[in-house]
Each structure stands twice: as C-alpha cells, then as structure tokens.
Amino acid sequence: MAKAPPITNRVRELREAHGGMSQAALAEAIGVTRQTVIAIEQGRYSPSLESAFRISRVFGVGVEDAFGWEG
Amino acid sequence: MTFREKSAWVMAVLMIVTGLVYGWLVMTLSAALGQTAPPLAAAVPYVLLVVVGSVVLQTVLSLLTPKEAQAPADEREQAVMDRAGSWAGLVTGAGVVCALGWFLVQEDGRMLFHMVLGALIVGQVATHLFEIVLFRRGSH
Image 1 (cartoon, rainbow over the protein chains, first blue to last red):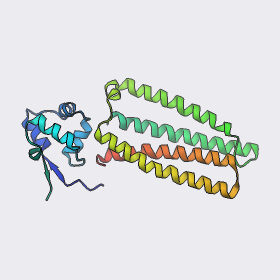
Image 2 (image 1 turned 90 degrees about the horizontal axis):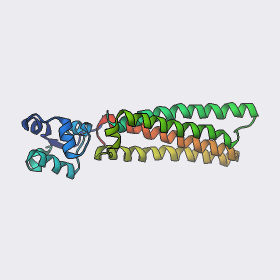
Image 3 (image 1 turned 90 degrees about the vertical axis):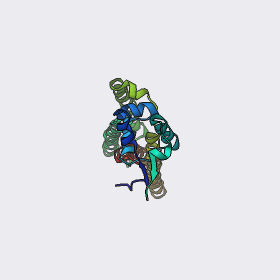
Image 4 (image 1 turned 135 degrees about the vertical axis):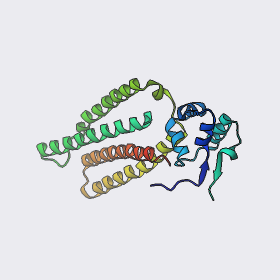
C-alpha cells in the first residue's frame, strides 16, 4: 500500500455541511471524476493546486480551511 | 470504476489473449516449418486481431458509457496513465534489450522481429496492468 500523502483535508466535512452535496456533484463542479473526489477524501490522492482552489471556491472557504499539512 | 479503468481492464484482457494467440502462432508455425522463427507475415493476423478487437471493444465501451467516454482524463487519471506508461516503457525496453542480445548470439533477424513485437505486446500489457493497479490504489 502506498504511503498516504501528508496533506489532510476537510472535503467530506465541507461537503456534508454544504447541504449534503454529493461526491458526484462536487466532482462535476471541479471537473474531475467521482473516483478522484473519493480518493481525495480518503487521503489517497493530493489534488493539484488548481483543484484545491476549485474545491475551496465551491464551498466558499479558503484553501487553508479545506486543506492542511499533517504534523 | 471510471471509464479509463474499464478501458484498461478491457485492453489488458485483449492484449493478453491476442498476445497468447500470437505466441502460439509463432511457435506452431516454427515447428511446422522446422525453423527457429516463422516469416514476418505471421504477425499480420495478430495485428488485424488487435486493431479490430480494440476498435470493437472501445466502441462498445463508449456506447455503454457515452458521457464518461467523451470526458477528458482528469488530473489523477492523467497522472496514473503517465506513470503507468513510464514504468511500462522500462518493461518494453528490457524486452527489446533481450531481443537484441538474442540477435547478437543467434543472428536471426526473423526471431529479432518476433521478439521485439513480443516486447511491445508485453509492454502494452504492462501499461494496462500498471494503470489498473494505480487506479485501484487511488494515489500516484
């Protein structure tokens, strides 16, 4: 199993706080597949800076509110 | 499962099956002709099989999931495909080096051709298998 990247995120939490937005809807909004959103939420994939900004904009928060650095 | 992962599964199966058919064809013709390697024309049925098989399978897959098929690869998929292609390139290269080594010893041009084609087939299989592993692992 690959080592998880040291980037943490609150995407699932933000999605649920955002009226229970579905993974598919978020994926559509930022232009990736649902599987990529799942991988991001599970910490198995670190999104590009562009996608991180897109995710943050969807939820109306700053990038630092959606993503963090472990440790 | 994304369209590209499905596509990788389909192409991996196609390349493995047709690759085995090609190997069997080369060995059968070699034995029948009493030569170490059959004429290069033995590759023609294989190439036709791969081209027709790829077109049919990709068309069916696209018809089943038209929206996904039209969408470009996203950043994670692109990264997975890039990495899989890079790793598979090493596999292909190793196969070609083996083929060249064989040619240095045996000086059999026909066998060189079949071995290089075999290396390309194994490289393609490796590409799709690496893609499947990386898609399933979820990271890159």
